[in-house]
Length: 348
View 1 (cartoon, rainbow, N blue to C red):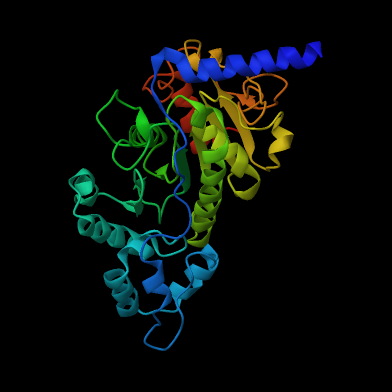
View 2: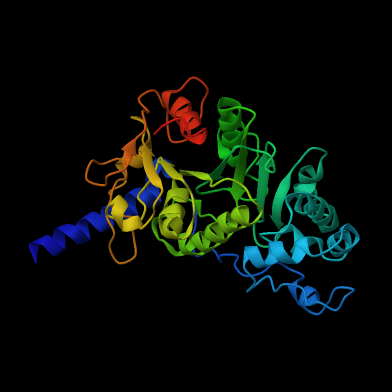
């Protein structure tokens, strides 16, 4: 009974801390965007000029999608882009360049000023979904020729309008991606993957795994899509709540390394519980407020063991000079140098 009381008190503390750290606001009970993209019904009703059915976005695997597009000529591919930009742009396994063009058209067709910058020349948008707060996936570098691929999996407050918003340099999904690519070099492509519904602020959505579970499904499919187009096995760099997503997806990705930083937990007690062949790394800076969040899991609240603890079993990334919760990719930090080495496969 005494042990149960201590657990309940700790869980209550976790909710209080997660709900009140730094006085952040929260938006709870968000509806996760799941399922195939808008326009799927029209896509399903269509056939190719030769009478072939189009791959169902809800059930076809990324490798099935890749094989379908390999069987089309250039004119057939471009006709699908013209008629169904939202579907092609979000179809994991479709040719990368085709998705860039489809998403440029989809952004323009949305007519929304908040998304307009995503259609600017040079942007490589690999996925765009305007539903809800919007989701966007952008590539920095040449994904088709890169020797190494890394994926930034962000935490709370990331969506299609905020992921590249003006903020402190080298923070946010796009800022982190740019910083990592600059440190890792030209033969590395970095993907800013804002491909799931993230929590808003720090509240019950951030303290529970509901949104992470939906995000894990999308992350696993996305990495399968990278494999289907011949990209190298990725390194996942997962910040804050993004590490919860990665923990739930770990056993379903072919990532070579999973790096978590500023993590509240991965919904696992140890690395072995992740059921992954990837090497798992963890970093936490001395002034990161996430260290004040109790590492518990009770009645669906909290994300479990601290990934930086010795008992968890992850490899430690040096982070003694990191400032705050978002400073892990700041130029000159030990953590960024270590991240770049991991991204390039230089650490064995």
